Length: 121
Image (cartoon, rainbow, N blue to C red; front, side, top):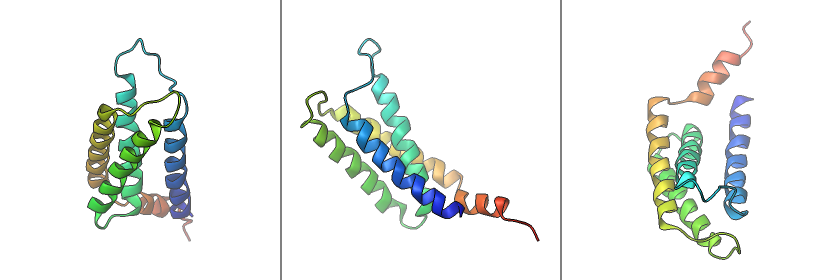
């Protein structure tokens, strides 16, 4: 049960990231680089979550997450209210690295949660 829920949340995270990245920016321009922190945290969380599901060959997952961030930045160039930003790609990639490290420090979290929540006989 936990494993299926974890997968569902992983895909939901991808769709939310795509949606939020292509809608008009919710950040006030008065605070410098607030969006970079959001990019860092968002992609870190995305990488961490997916890395729990795909423990083998995480370098492939890392490449996919970076390419996803690049694709979104490219797509933002086609929206009226957003623009492509190389610093966002850097923040996305940095977040991916942090998520990878966090996943290495806490492996198999869905399996652990499943074991904790399993009914005891």
